[in-house]
Image 1 (tube, rainbow, N blue to C red):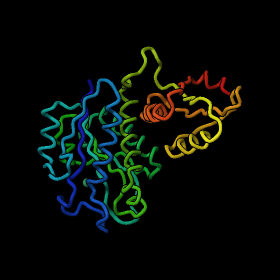
Image 2 (cartoon, protein in one colour):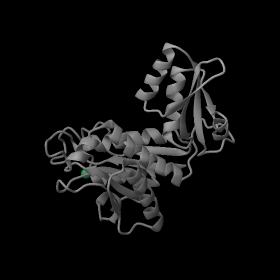
Image 3 (tube, rainbow, N blue to C red):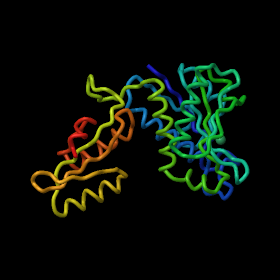
Image 4 (cartoon, rainbow, N blue to C red):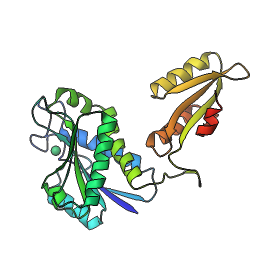
Length: 275
Ligand SMILES: [Zn+2]
């Protein structure tokens, strides 16, 4: 069992002085909270993971750092992740991740793996893995890291940090990094089905107005797709590929099955026969 604890830095609603965008358009906690929510949701689909959030998820109370650390330690967390938004000059930008100067090689390795996932998925600047004597890192017995997922003081990054899309990208990047680092297995995964195989979803045949309907649905839900004409003249949709180890695969199967109960899930080999 992997025990992962989380804290969204500070509190929202103006509770923590100063921790907000310069134009007052966002509290730092709003970003931190969104990222933690998306990360925890993504990891809830994996087996042998327990999660605990040690800040106040309502954002109304700025739980003191000593109390956050106590909760981490009393629960016996293995990995603690603190999520923050950065602030500096308007030109400063990018992602940076901190470990305590006394962090073990394993702790640094985990932190760097997570950091690289976030940099790659967000395509923001890479400020590197750094050391800092932050209380939340010093006072937690778990392997711990503090990730700064962008600068509120940079107009371009602030605009991103206000969106659920960017928060989801950061949160799911952290989650997927943990999945790959700890080789977590998805819940409801068919037994003996290899993980991390690219899979496709064949949604079946459509003709007439349904073509436009499913096209609009797939575009709206952000899926890539390809089409071919079936033997009966209808159009088949091939959606994907998806890495089965990733949260977006589970999302896609859930959302498409709601739309179309005829969908079939294809392996890479089956999809190769598709053309
Ligand atoms: Zn902060």
